[in-house]
Length: 465
Image (cartoon, rainbow, N blue to C red; front, side):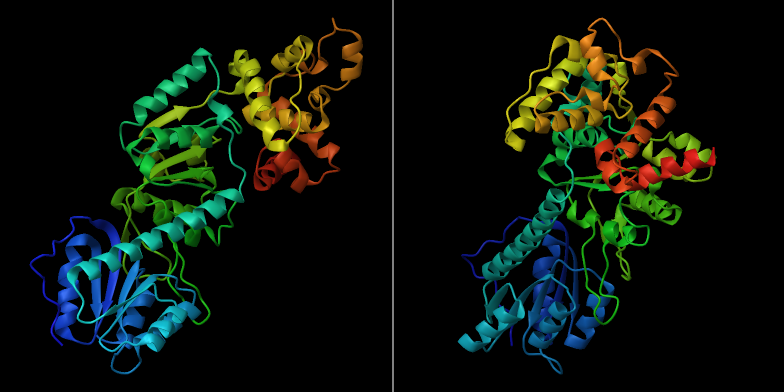
């Protein structure tokens, strides 16, 4: 069968998908050549195959956004290949093409999981329309998956960057300057200082704002799963499902890697190659996929110390540290606490469906005297618990609050007596929260605003002292 011709009244679209990967499957060389020549200028990669068996081999070795598949093939049919793809969990978009179609064929194609059906001979505009709509459906699937994933996770409050202090204004200015360039950024600072929110602000200020913001806490994913979580995988055998990784889902946007110091050493080497080449290789794949993603990483620990201890690669450290922005701890800008409290009350009360609480001048003084080892996250958690009980729950911070309220001139013992260094205060606070929940780390971790893995690591370190 001859390939469809360009009709005089049809104009080619200039729209391109430079990161898209396409597979063309047709046993007719003329048709296959036409499809490749038409799509290649508009996509990042176009491969072709003359049979279902050859296509199945390519599908096991590569990741494709779209497959254009002829129904009538020598040997196995295109519908058989499509059913196999879906039974193995491969959700790539498929456009079926055929010279012989009736209503039963169309119904069978849709039931098998095809996104579109073209009848030969088709016009160039029909092909480009199916191409565009298939890639749009693939993009919407990724965005839907990201949305569901984000709804299952704790999202940071926008209050982490609220404040009028010199430190917060300096942070906002630094993010504004860095947003104009495409360099990798390393955010450092103590747990709870708002690094994810700073990364999101950086994304929204940058040219990547039209793409998705994809966060991943490296400490929250099992080391055995984090590679496929980041880079995806092709079907690895019977019953194995193909899946896109977060880098593919973040195409055109920003990838935020929190607690980057928890990334296993082998994955650190892989990430370094990705940063250098801007290409990823899904697990089990033979070919690499180009990615256009800005990387923002964050750490609570000094990475230079981790390098010295042999837990972090020196070359990756220098590659991440192109631009480093340090977020200040809350104890360094306590003048922002009243503004933060007001913001948390205003945003959390409607969400919880409760009445706002009043914070007295005395209670605000208590808040400003506390050293906040958990930083802004700890303050947010305190306000959320206080809204639920209907009054500021300062007793979560100070023992003997009732005695202090009976003597307004008294000062919180924790603010003046005993060691006041950060490590001691943090340890005291974590142990107090653990005691309040009977030692249940699963309950204590969200109250402290840290991952359970981080909490267990802190406890293990203290046990070795």
